[in-house]
Image (tube, one colour):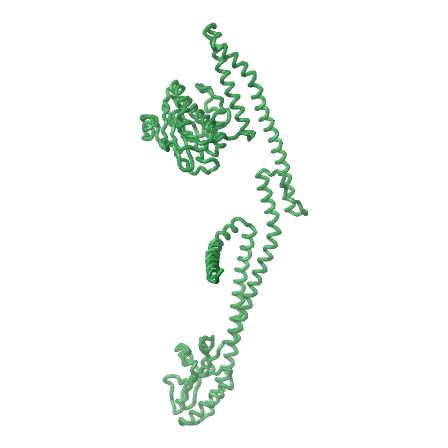
Length: 562
């Protein structure tokens, strides 16, 4: 491979690494937020370290301020003493001098300057004539350090010039230039009186660089100590919280496994502390729950087996009874009226008994978890058309008219045709039973992920309490109501199980006096999510009291079968 090729590969590798790092950085806030929500240990450590940092910051700020004030006050006392000593030395020289003339004044000025610098550590000295107070030939005495020219404020000069005697001292905090940087300082002003010259003002400047360096060192020490202490507190909190949270985490994981059906899991019991007491109580509760669940499961299996065995055992005598009943039913016209009616009743109840046995067997398969789907691509519209043709004669006898509205076309879906036909027949039978002779509309629609059908009747409807129990086994909304179809009371329960077996949903909307609407939604492809159902529930005409007020219902009722 050539050098250019290697360089190109390295460049591509670098270009891939860059976006990867950026993506990882972008995910950090989400990871932190997820850790904050899910981890009690992380939350406790963060809160402990944060509160400790706040407490340490407040303590450090207080200590830093106290030390700063102490350093300043200590330096200020020292400065005032030195300034007082220098002013006394200067005033003594002025009092003992009787020279006149400019040359003598310059000599006197040098003597005063030397005396001041010998009496104090400051090398920033300024001596000004008080404005308007010159009285003699020595009034030319005046000198100033360049660093003090701009820092002596008019307010300080006004205070010094108004001083009553040379015992008065006035000071002010200033900022002194030290090369390119500025350092804190203090300027002390003292009034002086020069015989034969008048009133003067002596200013001495002192920098606080040493105190400032001391304060910075103390602050840095406090900051490092606070960081180290925060880290130490975080480690201690992690150890303590881990000791406390770890048993809780184990208990939470054990509870989740127990809720998921792993009835054998238990919390380890170590020691005699409160956590162990909790573990012992939890394990006792788990033992009791496991025992109860095992007993209920055994009882359920016995019941399922009993129903299945009885249903199978009854099939043989029922077949014999059915054959004999058919013979009698075929010859009923040759019997006396009472015997003929008895043959008809025997035939009808035998059919109902046979249907009940079939439903019981189907329910037992669902309870045992042995029900299986035999899916194949099929058109829901074709299945509904076949079911409507089968039920149309029964609907006409009840005075109802069946209408089909296929909004979504004839799209196929992976379904078990036998089970879907059974659901449709159950829904149509329920609508005919409670439709009060009014029209029944069957709507079908589809999306890219789901197909749905809705069976809408405009009969008596149901109360919310009745609607919540409509899928219960052997439950009837109105036990006194006469059955015209002769169902077993298991049809809707089996339909709900069939829909769930497909990964779909069977839902109900109903209002007293406004009718009912059952909606079945199935996935287009087995195992895929449904998403949003293609048909609305409540239906579009749910706010009307009759189908004549609904444009959609009018289209279904007045038009031909789509």
